Image (cartoon, rainbow, N blue to C red):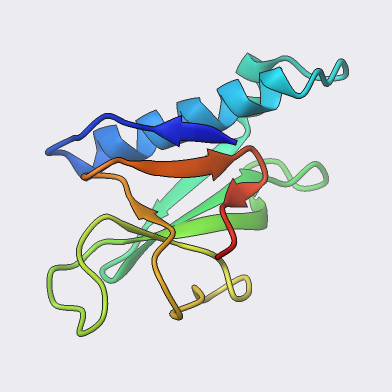
Length: 119
């Protein structure tokens, strides 16, 4: 796991920093079949009104998301979470709304190459 320490004012910059940290965490694990740059390139970010879905490009259908890596809250009008909160995926279309795993704007959380940390 890699600690995210930086704070950001832009949600886009915070997400890019988090994905860079995930790629760094990937490189620390000693995988040889893909470099950390190749790992980083495979991320897709789909921006919605409530959530930003982060996933990995499918190996079988280029340009399509094959698996969901996590979600980031993209609104100030959520009753439970604040903008920038990182959420684990509950499924392909929805986040797990039990608790945030960190916040890309505030920093101070851990991230794995496999996705947001479990609680």
